[in-house]
Amino acid sequence: MMEQAELAQKVDSLLDELNQIDPISYDLGTPELFEVNALNELVEMGQEITPLLIERIQANDSSKRLAYAVMALKRLGDSRAVGPLRELCARYRALDRKDEWDYALIGQCNLAIEALETAGR
Image (cartoon, rainbow, N blue to C red; front, top):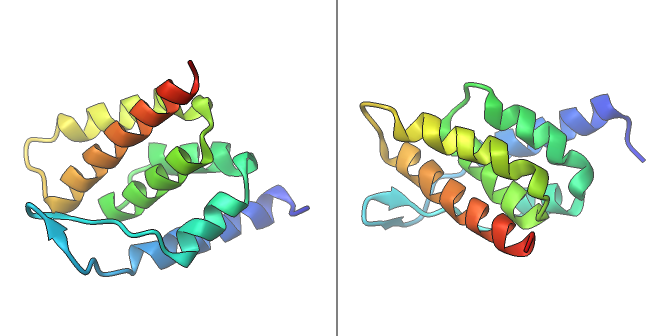
């Protein structure tokens, strides 16, 4: 089992990798996020990384990196993420000016919140 510092470093490394991906297609101007190896690796690390991902989404970071972190949280299925996801979504909805990645992030938040709330019932 990895130490917390190693775990955090691995999470950050995988999120950095995801942040480098260029979307192949856009849906109505919003980039589509893909199920790629780095995302699968994050999910395979298990719910143990949920607190680390929650920390990441509470920080100011690129919308793209945050969107992938949200996607991982959704797939992990840990309901502890619902509150922080709501806060993140509200923070980005309140932006006066949004780019395509901001909209992608809001969409991922909505999908994750819905999935996590449904799973928690």
